[in-house]
Image 1 (tube, chains in turn orange, blue):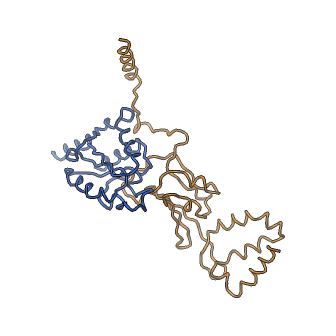
Image 2 (cartoon, helix red, strand yellow):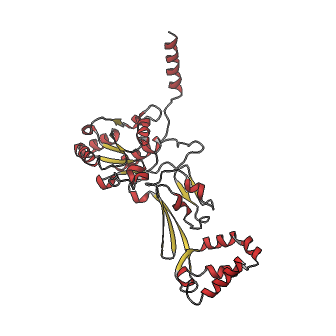
Image 3 (tube, one colour):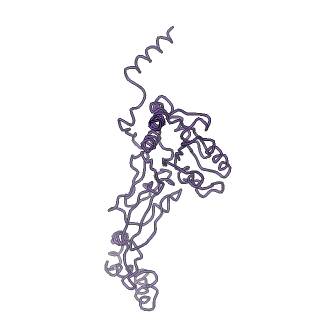
Length: 183
Length: 139
């Protein structure tokens, strides 16, 4: 008898306050720590490609074309693990709380970010994301001051693409620079 | 006139058949969760059917393995027209972590024509409801 009273109480309670979610009418708010679709923040990303290296499924790929480096995250391959967010040194990729990812076409299930490439000062060929160059010079700034090297000096050296930097004209300058570091 | 009634009936009662192909069963659990009173897809007339002959929508979860390709094609042929295929979960959409595995027989759209892609690993039951809503809007 006691059990039956419990059931009737439960039924009356759910009549007033239904247990079913009202999802399509009212949006669902995910709990804290929910891992939804990852997204890029365009102005923070420097295009280093660290996210593509750690991605366990290979969902993040990048290709250089037309003076831009395009980082592409494919939601169809992504396993929403959040390694990219952990690894990104610039905090440019982060997991959002988006879960409504249904699309009619597979090619729509992706997100992209374009990073402009730097052009080599010798041959004019784009070879390296310019924002990554700026960021990396900023990082070694303190060390440069310790060795008494001007910022512009290093900048001039790394603004030359790998193909040009090992030519006869540029080798002596590079060698002198290295000698100052190992002194 | 008959056509209008037919399309209305189709929109009000899309019966699904759940085809688990392979993989980790995470998506299967989410599909079953969507059928429970908490999420209750029966609000939209969605019923889970055990036979492809009774179904309108094939809900494919998991990676399409070399073993399952023939069976998947047979199930697709058994489904009466008009039929729709939903790729549920990242595995079915593009292969996810099993993309480079030896038993992987291409993403689902290499085997069957897919009408709706629901990425997620696993997608929430809400994502399934959202996907079905978008699919029914297309009818």
